[in-house]
Image (cartoon, rainbow, N blue to C red; front, side, top):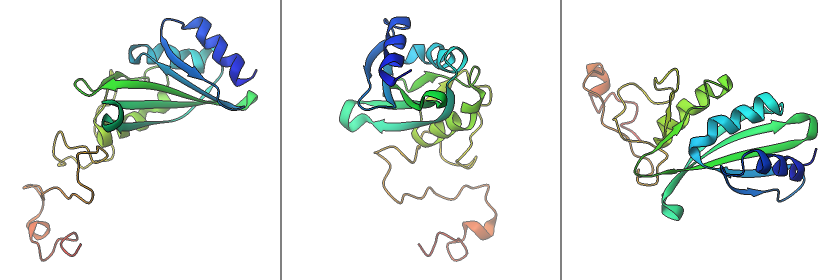
Length: 174
């Protein structure tokens, strides 16, 4: 199977859910879907087509498109095809259905894009933070464009006194 053939198969199966599909070179397939169909399409890639989940990523594209981009990467190893499953998420409601219930390997990666970009994977079985400390400020996501480069949040009140002192804090010299 080629990337073009896989794209045609997905187009036929999910015609009303696919926004754009492109196979720009051999072995690469980029599929943009409606975010509400991400679980169904991811399950089809894994369970029906034998694709392997690789990773996912969250990107702040609000400057360019006014949206966040969530991309789930899959590989169809037997055919040498790398699939990027894109879904754009509105800035006003940064949520996308979690694929972790059907693709367990996505667990930590979904928690990471939630921590870093602030897009919530709804229905995720373990909504705890993964990357950020528990005392990290709510609604502050370090990979968003509106967070200043090098920003350091204030030390939490619950931190030991020695850490709250500027003379003893490891970030004080930075």
